[in-house]
Length: 124
Image (cartoon, rainbow, N blue to C red; front, side, top):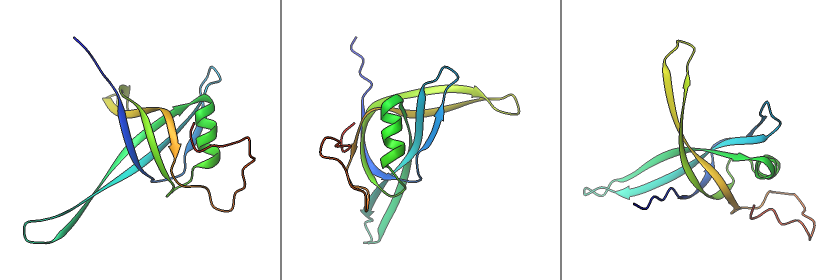
């Protein structure tokens, strides 16, 4: 049986990336991406729904996202879904599903920020 775990989303950062370092020295950044869905009901009323997806990126990608991404910027995220569990403060098991991004494309450039010719952070 064939298995595929691949996700592709495009949206806007709902907040600035949060950078952390693991106990073994690996860098990671997390940030939510908001995706808007708009439609018209049968009565003609416009509706809007926003879904938020938690993104996690590692090492060099994490450092670049932390450096160049800010709330409101548009990104394209390619990666895989991952569900993990942890114990909350009450001892109950909690589950979280996130997208582990392995390729991030910056769809909007940072404002008032110059880039060197040899440094193109638009695809990491």
